[in-house]
Length: 411
Image (cartoon, rainbow, N blue to C red):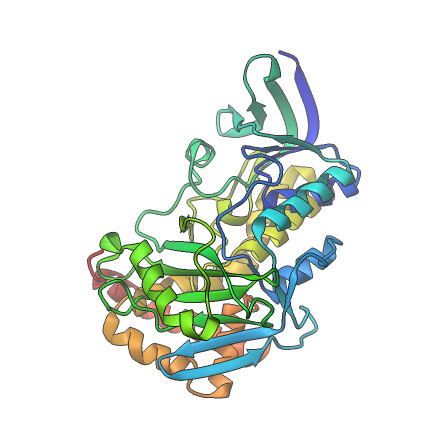
């Protein structure tokens, strides 16, 4: 088998991987992407795009004509409802979108191909290891087998599976993760311009759940309906996601005038940590790097941004790109994501969860901070009250984190 040479090899053709491929190909680099699924494959997801994600898609020059415009978020905690528009800032647009993943991912895949990236579908790729160094990837079997050497291998294959285990990039044991489930239903409110999040979600036995239920109108006659829960809650291992979704569906059915489910409800796991996100010759991006907000389960925007960043740093200096990538991602996101994980242990205590939810939307000022957190609009560059609150939360929760973990409810 001949060894082929590329500048960049990407494992995974979702938003993170294709963002990296688009950036690399447009810069004139040779790039190849291996995706296990088919072109246009579906990915189980809430389909919501934050203003941060819209900003990244705009940077990638991806047309959004096929996406449904969203102007803000409706948050419900108990009997209190707060409906707020996304804020206008210098960094991000003041709108989001809902774009079903089968269409979003197809648009990104096609943009990568149009830019000159070589897209290979229905093919699993695994890293070629030389000690701790990644030289490239091996992919395919039989006459279609290929051996690729690359200046940089970008891992965008999620947080579980063979690739993560080979690189030691799997989840940190004992850290927070989430489970979510979703389906679609017809509704006359399909063109609603607000996402809806029920923060006071209950499990199948009526107990409070650290998580939320969502209604994300897709603008195509349907709504993405789903819910998710964090692993820090008592009884998490016994949680019946299908029953929880059914109960939530019954709760929102009257106001949304829902039709029957259009497909079988599908569940997925939300990674929120990783052992490592770089090494000699490789970096992990998006979900593979644990870049998922523990407070909303969202990670598409982080995937798009981290994919572009990895390529930009490779172009700047291939020799130190992996280490610089790890440093810059850490500086921008680690404090916020760490705070989210610590917060998940806090609200895993039911006696804290209920008053905490009531507080999150108690006043418009506090609700705006909740909005910023739910919209992934907070990082090390966030000015104003939201940034200050998260900085203080990181310091405060850091002090009590050992106690929170020690006293966590048995899952």
